[in-house]
Image 1 (tube, rainbow, N blue to C red):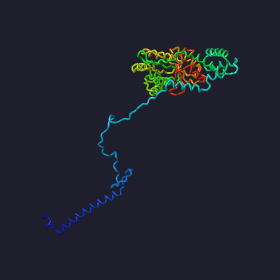
Image 2 (cartoon, rainbow, N blue to C red):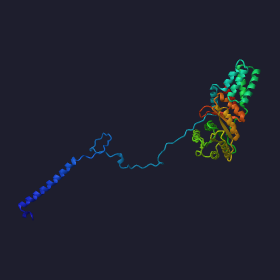
Image 3 (spheres, helix red, strand yellow):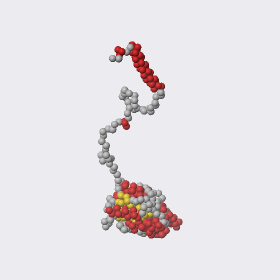
Image 4 (cartoon, rainbow, N blue to C red):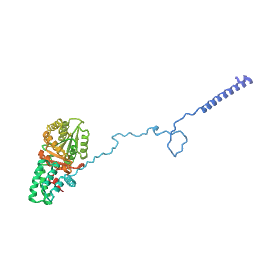
Length: 398
């Protein structure tokens, strides 16, 4: 109704106004876009996209796997997961006879042994007083001891004068006299069998550094090779690595180790080991004690306490004193003190390699009236064997 009433001039004015509005709006949009182009573009971290042979329609970075929607996969529990089976392979110790043969061969190969030195002297063309003095010196240097040396020299002089001085005769006479000194009549059996429904208990004692813990581990191997079940008692709580060392020996052959806290009461651990042995119906319980100097009265008294505490539950069948054969007369002094504190039933000589110190076998047995039951040679796990007097002497003279 209004359009017909508007004049031509009014229509022109309205058209011009609409045109102006359109021009102004377009100009603002252009300026805004131009300003946006002039501003520096925001820097974005450059992300290296993995190489791919696929062609993509966009150059934008692809979404990584971490941003993918979770897959509809059920979660596996520990029970559902198949774990690899762990198997412990136990070592099979060498038989007692095999060890004896090997130890004898090692003794025979040793140079400068007691037997070789004596044979060289006895094989001289003329055995005068000087020769006999050299023989006495050789025996005393080999730690045979003064009284056994005098006895042996007297017997040798008498027999050599009566029976002749040839090399073959000299060797046979020397062999017989050395065997007599080592005394094959002594009971060297090891009490390592159950009795009265209880396991045999073996207590290992000695000074520092004689190889006590190693000897316990080796003895466990010997007994397990004889199809006996063994429990080890780590009553050496003063040396940090002693319990770990003993447990490693046990794990290698399948012997259980009873241990306690470092610095704990040795008697308590020994008691627990024997108790475990009784409950498990083991054949033997081997108790390792801390090395102690024979001059330390308090430590020596503690050793007696360990034995008394064990005896509240079971009888101690063996007390084995470990002696380093290379210590000579010092080892003999140690043996005397230990024998006064605790009832030693047998000796273990370690590092007995057939050298000039082999005479300690004779001296320590004479001093204590206690037999050498085991000997150790070398560093191998099976380098421990029963002591056989005749085989020992034969090895020295081979």
